[in-house]
Image 1 (cartoon, one colour):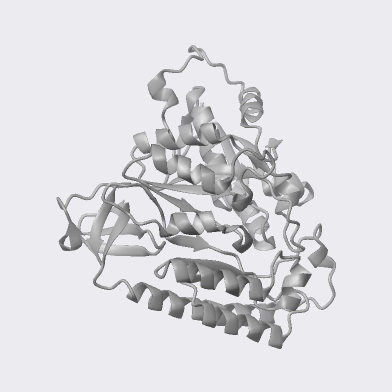
Image 2: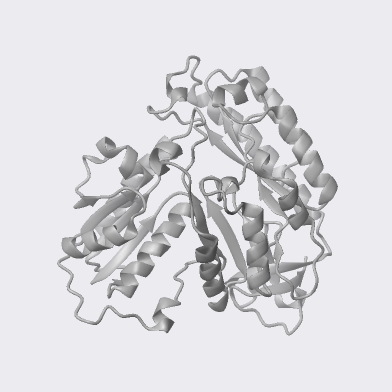
Length: 417
């Protein structure tokens, strides 16, 4: 039986698709690009645009594999089933519970596994990933209930994986050649909060002890959860061949106006954010800080937007991800007064994106002439693409490489910028 998975949305969704792919492959299914027996679309519901994109991807998947059985899974299928009623799917699934989903897929496709279910150690150690960096989900769920966010309704309560399970998977990924491990989660900073036996900083220390010649990166984390332990791990002096935590933090700001932050039900004020940023930069001068900002939140006046713009300009993020506000009918923000028109949101989004381009260029220029460690993401004939510790991409040629001059995907190499 052949399958194909189409994935939309965040890194957690990407990880979920990889885990399902692994289970399918280990149970006798084969991944293919066409003439498949089953198509699986892993959906996102973070914005209205994302929901519409899910429908378009499903239509493309149907057209590519017209005879295949179909499954729609993920956040959109869990929370917005009524939006998908016009699609000709065979099965609808929510999030997680992949063993149960696997059995449902077997029944749906009349799959009969003739070979033994026992797996060789070699097969069981395979870590299917499409990227040069390994994304691992260590935590799921969120209970923060920001007024605009649908995720707590789709992903549920906080759920952390055991440290031993995470360590085992990371060790396997390193054995499979990955040199950057990205710790991902819906509310990453609260890893272990519901089990009280482990915290994120402790898990990072465990991982740094068991992996060699590799680095760890944190995906998005709330500013209030960047504690002294994490700051000290980021600032730790490096020795040749040691593993380390990348000097990059993605810290969602969402707005520079305290009025809007309160309406959003965000757990900090503008002043709190500034104070923590100053502390981080005082300890780690060259750190890359990226952020998310929502424009056009209900009630956001021109003055509120200008306040956000001024703060972003002052804090000098190395990249700003800008999102026009998208109302989800299940969230409090969708019922708020003073909804902002689409034209205003587009205008404000463009202003912030232009600022992001300028600040990103300024940040990268700080590293001109330096030698950086890059994870090779694309291995071409004359030009190569690598991801720096500071999260920006570098296009480089062989004459910039230090060492043996060989370029292998997933490896960390030294390159003069």
